[in-house]
Amino acid sequence: MLTPTTEGPNAAPQPPTIQRTSQLPASDVALSALATKAADAWTTSALPPLLWLSKAEFTTLAAAYAQGRDAADAAGDQRSPQSQRLKQLDKLFDKHLRYVKGYLAEAHDEDEGRSYYPEFGITRENKVYSLPRARTERVKSLNKLLKALPAHDLDKKKYGTAFWQPLVQEYAQLVQASTDTAGQRSAQVSSKDQHEAKVRKALRALIHHLKANYPDTFEAQLRAFGFQKESY
Image 1 (cartoon, helix red, strand yellow):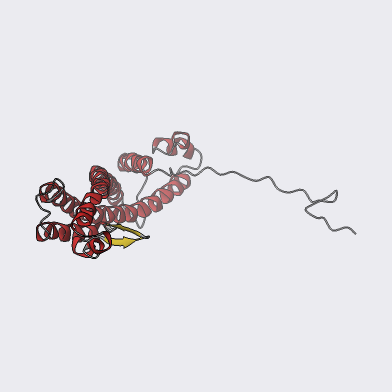
Image 2 (tube, rainbow, N blue to C red):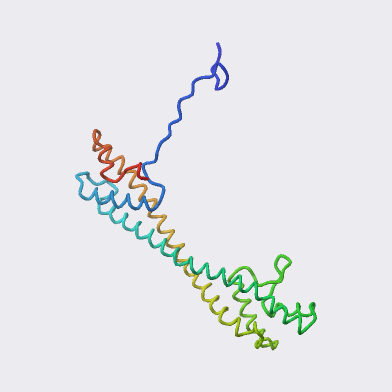
């Protein structure tokens, strides 16, 4: 007796693969809209509460998730212009640091000039003498540069203190603001993610709740509660 195999003429027929469409949207925007719609529909519906979740609790949860998502987005929007300006300043510093190196080379021979680099916050990274790439360290190095310019009589040069000081001040403020914003966004995203897990759990339970209470008309009820898969 031949044993069916998965290959060749004696291959056993394979069951068709079933593609299941999720009844919950992947996007947080659509999920928030669904949760708000479902909460409103459930509040006015004859559908009873769940043993572990009341209608009022779900309304509060949906609102908290929407607020957390908006707050996380707002924090991200605030950080974007900060990041853009920081990139511009980084390029400006990298471009004009060569003038400071040139001043040191003029005052001393090249090798001796390099010996003063640490005083100016200039470090060697990847065989290149530059300001540190990490921004918190770069702020420290820029402050060293500001102190070193007058100490070496370079403060009155074209690219001396008058050039560097306002840019360094702006840069330091932006780095601090960016760090604060990143911390706020991290906290907002964490809060949003915690609410999202609870919202998804509640919505899945609500789907089964509707099917159990409306066995003949659950599809229409699902649509009335906002579960319209074709829209997300």
